[in-house]
Length: 390
Image (cartoon, rainbow, N blue to C red):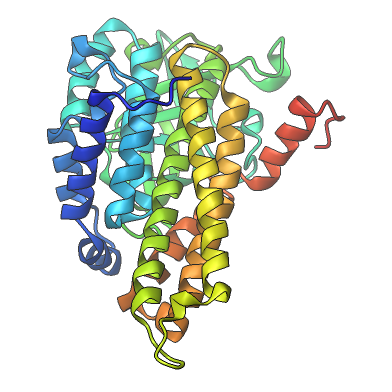
């Protein structure tokens, strides 16, 4: 991997930094309190071409890769947004853009990719189910054959961005597990509209990430056509894994940005806050060392994430690296924000410090989109060769 930053990469980071800082802390605090979707910044991101960084040139993208997307997200989230802005990339450029560009029919790519890149279409993905959780092979939502198409029935939970989306990537079974030749067979992916007949959704009240809705989604005999199918029928599992691994990369990039933002706020406060003997509290090692430790961990997570992104761009396996990066980033970002709150003392608990929002938003990513425990299972089994434990 070449660690030099190209002029093109530098331009992308500079553009992302400018946009991130233009829509800074006060913008996000206002939207968080109103539980409002960040329309203005997403329009600016799309206008600058950042939503299409990793998407094909022939459909309006930049034709670059996940390295550039990760760097852009780090810069955007560090400007004031924190981790939740990465979810917007997860939803549309990943669940929409990467999925459609990699597995969609040419008609679907031609129709949807330019709209994704320009911001005219936003995506969500309906995967998680109440009875399956992290075990996606146990999902029950089923599309039964109906002439040339299918009828989709079932339910999903914790589906992000449904209220704001024009399209939804739905993961379901088209062959029941007991009838499939292999455990991973029988899953299929479809692209539909959330307002299609038979689809309903209801919001979930939650602790944080208030600028994006989370919903329970119900499907009652929703009509699906061949044109809605993404990839091969009954062979959706490999495609789903590809999409989920790129999801890890953008999640990690957002956590890196959130951690850097918290450390920046803590540093500014520690340099100016004077309590004992007129010295700034940042001159004490008891304040410095925890922040320095968190910074070291954040930078390690960023490097591992860039390695995962580079491997992805080279067409090489990168799931292990993406998982490790996400594990460390979630822990490091949470620690950085907690430590920043501690530096602020009581004011760290106040909304005006912005840290409480960063904490609420980042906390989600210790168990989503994949939990720490599942990542440790993966490392133990695949990297250490230990017996499967779950």
